[in-house]
Length: 182
Image (tube, rainbow, N blue to C red; front, side):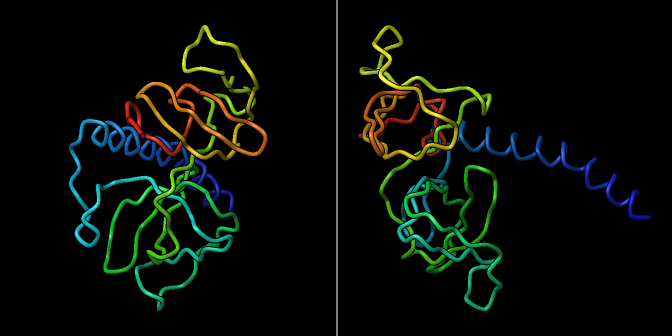
């Protein structure tokens, strides 16, 4: 019986992954095209990227303190996407697809991003200018966290511990495709 149950879980994983990829692609495309509206509580664009303020953020199963804590973030500055609002609560999604509800005051409008190459073993080149013919000044690993300084729609200037330069925008999670950030 356990082997059948395990098989069902494994079999659903690719379907779930495909559904998540499709949902994220649709959301990113719609966001870039300006098809989403504003949050009913904040009046800010929905969905939108923000970052975590403190080093410890409880993520709950629903938008009240009565809901169980489903997991805890332990790093300030991580980018998350707000996908829904309920009073003072925001439903968020992280770069790995985990979702839950956090209290609004634990979020910051400060933009950050995580380096996400197509292949996790690949190093992402960091350039001294937003141009593929520019000088490569570093190579960043998957999962590197950076502050987003500016995005042109195809390139982003990012900075972090010991680096500051330009990266191709599609290799970051924390900015939408074609999004301009000033």
